Length: 247
Length: 75
Image (cartoon, rainbow over all chains, first blue to last red; front, side):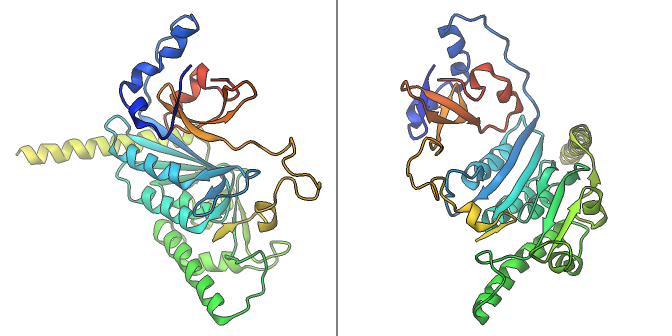
């Protein structure tokens, strides 16, 4: 079995497809037919969303340097027609989350997100950035204000304004890409009496749909069905466009 | 800047904190990106000089069915 270094493009680039059958031959195993190509690709965004800072190794992370080029590749690929986003994350870097959300929102290919388990904090803009969003009935989304270092005390006016502006970026994105208004999202962020040590809201399954953040409650089959639907709409539109160009 | 429900002291805690020992066996070995059979994966070095597949980072769902990329496999 060959493992090529990530930093050595000369070894990796030629005939990447042929390398896939290499290991089987080496071990003398029976050649298995190549699995059928899928027109839907999957990105799982799990654990902490890691951005500008490398987190200590006990954190399970999804790194922005992996996700962002993958989104570009999916948009550019001629075989891939749709994208499924699996979200089970506790949140993470604000700018990494916003960067992924902006890329997802800027794709022409249909995307469907499923919130499973938890889609908290910065996962909210990622979930709403897709063409269609689904939440599992048992999944939760926590909406709370941004904090500097885990404490609620803000020392200076500048710190407060900085936090406000960072928060505003998240609120604006969520409001632009969901049925939730900036006012109601802010209200969810600062609601008192729901979280033990903090202000904020925990939305479980249907609550997220009622709040206007997520489109529907469902799971994998619902997501794939919706994605197929969106893909066929896009195919019809692109056929229509080509027809118009001919005439 | 982190926007997460996880307390920051848990995010930034070092695994050996409080135990008085550093580099303990419980500390996870850092995994490095590699390409195996044309698929991007994260591997961690194993005791015999080979690498253990930790995680597949491909967007093609069919890559996850390839038997030589099952996490834990030595490559």
